[in-house]
Image (tube, rainbow, N blue to C red):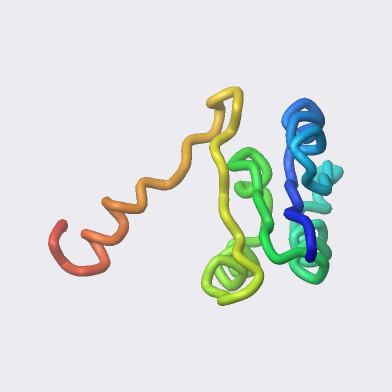
Length: 98
């Protein structure tokens, strides 16, 4: 069974590695490539919010919409990058907010 892959900073990656995940700490500019490689190897890909902001938006959207592997953006441990407000986004898409 494939193990989960975490893409993020070195400190968080150490914790995910201890929990049994494979980890990738991409260099600046290599975030989209790291996501593509992780999707080829894993059934679950966890992406730090701090890394997600540097991934090509089209690639991240396609990864999130794909049925497999599951791609989840997880909170940035330092809190520097906020997760998107999905509830607000959905309300706007449904026409419930202007």
